[in-house]
Length: 238
Ligand code: ATP
Image 1 (cartoon, rainbow, N blue to C red):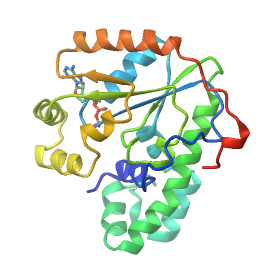
Image 2: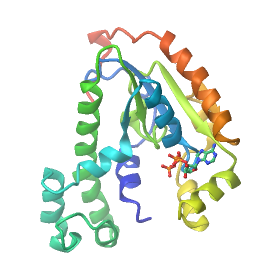
Image 3: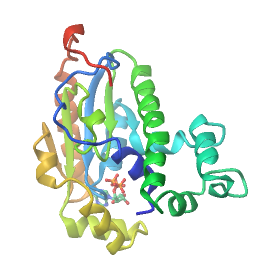
Image 4: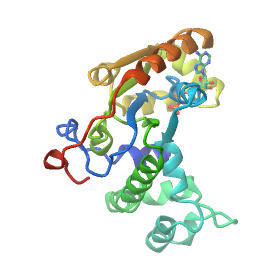
């Protein structure tokens, strides 16, 4: 799989045994998890929620930002894997990095050791930056698979679903080959596993109007939810 951002965020995961522990570093806003399988419509839902006034922190976007030119994580990647991972403009060339880093277990581990902490720190920084009264949508494709992501004290977890064939069709329209999409889906949690942590399930098997209606309802409910008051005794460092 040559999808670096998915690897980075997903590789935060081990298990979700501690998912209900509050995380000491997160004390602002009402945190809402948003997740779903690839092509389910997470980004579309996030955009609708943003239009309603939510603050969205997007894990894929963070994973890209921390390896932009000038970012410390990119420098460490170059030191570990060589200048061949950069393109002519000095930007990360993801296929080249993937070809080198995924060649063996050491490389794969090193890639994770360099990128996961950077992604985690930047994600938490963006969450903390949100206004105290914000509804903060944590758009995390691998929320169920990621221990750190699952451990946040969400007031709600929104799961977006759509039938497999619909997702494959939509992804194909976006230029993702079906076999590639299916491979990635097989490496992700199942709909059942995501449902197990959901407070709201959005059915995105229909048109955008239907999606928008459901998002309106979810938003109204999110506005009624209070941010939890964190107790220092139960907080744990990430
Ligand atoms: P990824 O996991 O790849 O990031 P995603 O879960 O964020 O995907 P989106 O990018 O929101 O999913 O949606 C996948 C594609 O399907 C996009 O091209 C989007 O415009 C389209 N799409 C989403 N919902 C609908 C809908 N209800 N009707 C038609 N097209 C849709």
